[in-house]
Length: 191
Image (cartoon, rainbow, N blue to C red; front, top):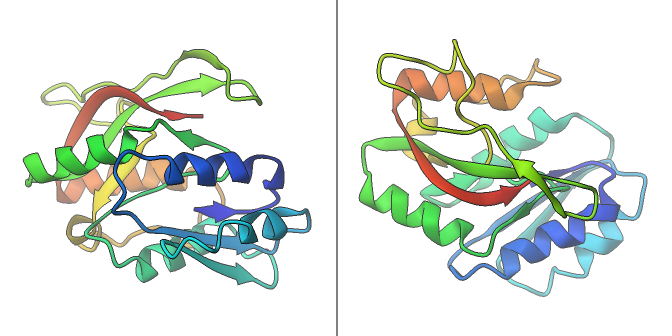
């Protein structure tokens, strides 16, 4: 989880991980030079030995944070959670099970739900299975919740530090080149 000035939302994001039915997780949080109360809010959760906190002294950008977080992750599978979004309580167990069951898929994503600023649902997201002989280059099928097998992620160049935005879409394209994709048709992520 990369964070920059999302103190208003970050506690709910962290709690959505803590409340998972699947308990064998680690949460790496990198604060990117926040000037709001983000760090104070994050520190409230550092008693949980599954939560690790790092911070940049200045704002370096989300992609720089993601590169550092992925490199420090010890997990075989990892997912990206934005600090102003939340996971459904079965998100980690569903994705873990999908990675175990589908060993050839190094990139597994779910459906998501658009929400208002209080996380009240507005509408279902646009994710769906990539049709045979199609790609995300033509139509965007893959979005949050995005999870990766680290071994598949390591086959591609990873996040591009020059990107200021659309880093997530760039990773979808890269993963299509190195591994099979799988869609889990459940709303596991609230955006």
